[in-house]
Amino acid sequence: MADIIITNEGLKKLKEELDYLKNVKRKELIERIQRAKELGDLSENADYADAKEEQGFVEGRIQELENLLVKAVVVENNNNKQTVNIHSKIKLKTNNNVVEYTITGFNEADPAAGKISNESPLGKELMGKKIGDEVEITTPKGKVKYKILEIS
Image 1: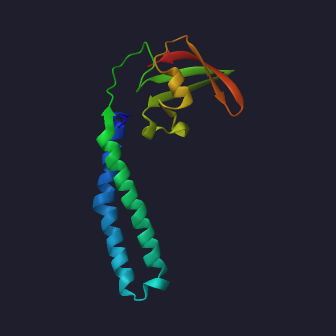
Image 2: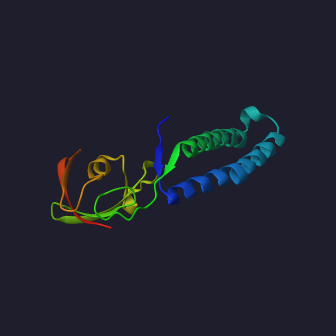
């Protein structure tokens, strides 16, 4: 059983989602299924079929979240500004662009919001590196070099 690296913020979000699914969404779906059953013939009842399908997805997600929480290992922010780690906010130079990312656990990654996973190709290469270090990753468009300008 491999540990899942997560921040306190990520753990909180997982717990909130699990609570919502178990205590709100699950009850809503049970009520929706019950109302659909009262309409009669289930073989031609699209609302019943939709609700049952959604119930399957919700129950699967609940199970997935419970498994994640069992394996979760919270990594505290050690405020290390010398090397890249989980929680690090980094400024990188690539080609003529400067980009900023925060390193997170895989389930918190949101590249559009500037959050990359420690397990992503770039995140893996950056872990443990220092200001001034360069890393190179292969992307679908070819090799890209990044230079670490700042760690905060």
